Amino acid sequence: MSVEVLVAVVAVGPSVTELDSAVNAVHRAGETLGVIAFAASGALVAVRKRLDLFGMVVLACATALGGGIVRDLLIGRTPPAAFTNLTYLSASIVTALILYFIAPSRRLTKGALEISDAIGLGLFCVTGTVIAASAGVGAPTAALLGMTTAIGGGVIRDVLSGEVPSVLRPDQDLYAIPALFGAAATAALLHFDAYRAWTGLLAAAGAVGFRLMARHYQWHAPLARHARD
Image (tube, rainbow, N blue to C red):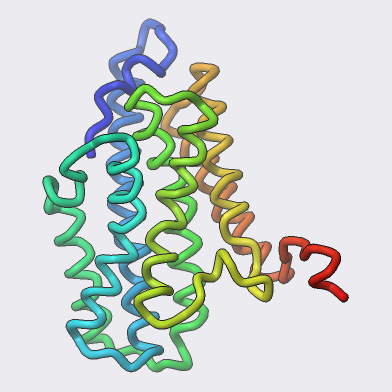
């Protein structure tokens, strides 16, 4: 998933080539780490659901690649990069296989699942926004597509595992809002020509921290008044 148009959003200066290289390198690393983190969350859900090896691989790949596929289809990027760059598919499969052979206890998967899911959320909301912006969409649309990239895989994972997606459940902690926070911050950085390797990492870290705090303090979105009665 290369981002050729990042040259247009990085501020022009005496070290523009070095800045472009750094941004692209961090972007690629962020995407790979996000794929691994989301693949791990999908595989860990499969462990908790007592699925077999094939089920682990399917959930890992769906979680890691689903959001990016939805984003690419929405911006007209066909075929989606998940089908043209097999690095991410391979990383998803290898992650599932590693967790299969490690065979973590179902009781030990909850904490690891939450952490890996938060990391994937933070990284994908940033990289998804950058890719959407590179397609020429405006900042608000890029932010929404970045959020879609971050939460899409989790929605597909929940549906395949027989659960109501956590983003739709009032008893679940904030999930989509931290993703939108990171995506909006990234879109603002791109709009004001302030996107750098370190600012992108800060946006991702902010989304990860927001998600983990929401989990720790059990922050929920407000219910409609009639639903509270």
